[in-house]
Image (tube, rainbow, N blue to C red; front, side):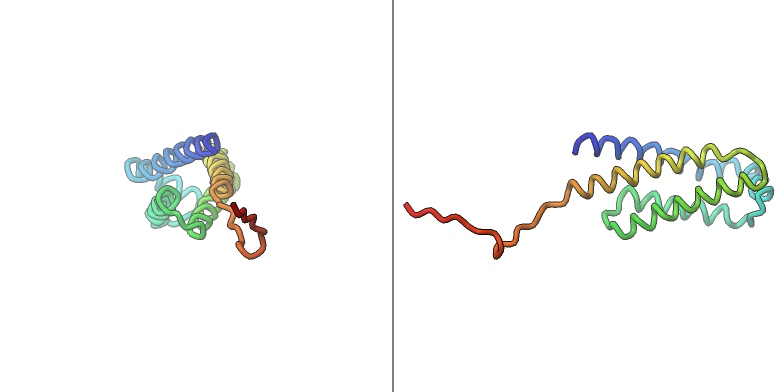
Length: 137
């Protein structure tokens, strides 16, 4: 369980750093991001929506214990990166390497999260179906 948790934390840290860098780049290097979004054909207001959604999803992955919300966050990130790769390929930009890295880190995080959840499950014993051994002294 310790190695699974170590792999999970490493993958989540790398993924978190990539997301934080992407959001910070959107704010600090706004003009370049606007130019790239215009080339891709996306509306400019989507920059702030994606940044807020990515920060919200990252917060859910780090702090939330609800599996249902985590699954939605993983799905949202996957769709974001998959559509990003497709958009870059459609305009023949060839600059989707960061999205590929993020998908790989997201996949490793997802698999390790599943393994941790399986390892944390405590088997419940049904007291009515298991025989008991009573000793009389």
